[in-house]
Length: 198
Image (cartoon, one colour):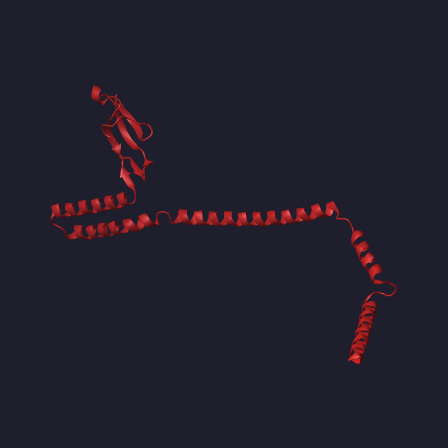
């Protein structure tokens, strides 16, 4: 039993010596463990101080890069929206024209019928039907007639062509309408040309 304890102790001492030899080989020649630690600490202390000019230059370059990217994105956005606006303007009336095409077809059929028709009243009824269809189609698209006759003259929606003498009840009011005015979605698109009583 004693021999085993002595043997284990001897093995432990050999292992410790090998570990010390290995750690000494890992250190540069001529330096002990304390010297190596001191040198590493000195290297940290001797590190170059950060140059503020370089730091600001790096920040400037970063901000300039962000600015150029943002400017480029905005320029692309402007070009895209301009192109979309041009496309929208060129096709803005497409829906209205599509809605009016059936009325045009009715007019063409009416003209063909006129060539052989002998009944004027039936022809007149056909033209009235086409007129009402046309008017209804435009109203569905937001077109609204302006009521002018008998209304007080308003320079914002009426265009006075002339004045005529009128009774006291029609002074300053629209007596006659030479050309109808129209609203589109509540906005005046054509002023009514009117005769005003004076």
